[in-house]
Length: 422
Image (tube, rainbow, N blue to C red):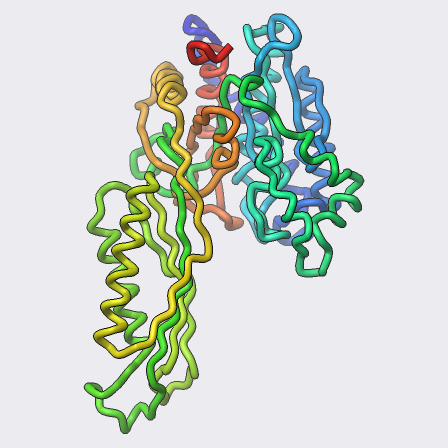
């Protein structure tokens, strides 16, 4: 679809994508809810189906040593550097069917459209379905994309799932060789860039009444575990001014986190997703309260400063209320900025399809966080109903799926490698 190609209004791409989304969603370990975990029988069945779609689209296709599915559509001559398109096909437990598969299936359908028209480009296209992005089974995210990026940590092979099976054992049982995982890696010179289309997983595009958007960055995240210790006591006999109520202290901390994030206009978000108070009786003042903090922002400096500020405020609250405090960092992931030159081309493709190009950050993690180590990264967001994700109600309208596909296809057909990339 070059600049002179008329837009198609028949939703052909969208219909093909939605049909395949539904077909893939039928592959689940539980027929009552969608669950498709890494290195399971469902993973194998999904991989075989996706490989078949890749081959139908004119690609050579194979499974790599970590279980990713990979297809390649050669350019005007064999062996040219490649533009990589991808997303993941594993799910969380009781998942929605769009998170991950939409980007992968859209990429395959785009290549199939090129193949039907006999169109070869001055670069190759590689499509990758990453086998493990969610990290549900082995509690270590982005295993598939880290293998492709050459940053796979082999120590993870000793991690065990809830059944006591190690990742090394699971890879072998799946029919792959854990000693060959390093061979999945690409080097920066092989790739012209990495592009991922994904549902937004938030409500911003819906509020803007737009089907697609340009992702500016994948926000980094800091997660902390906090524990406040006070003094348990009888709910009816300890005067309010003498209490060392750990739960009341935690409530003040939570209010401060929300207050600071609401006052920040540049994309900082903070969440307390878990809290537990003990002893947990109706008529007992809580002597201990534990809670988690998840902080995200579009830049690492911004997030780090915010975390420092919030920790300081929590320390002040604990001191004033005479509460003991333990606070530990449990997770740290850097921000992955999307390359300005790729963002510009995504915006051009969106505008050419008749939509307003709208910039927004991603608060959720994506495979691009790993792929940035081997290629410049760009992302297209597609509107999802209500911003709901990781839930069976996750939904993308047919017209929006089609709009995303048209934008991605236009972008690929008119793609201009960064000067010097080849």
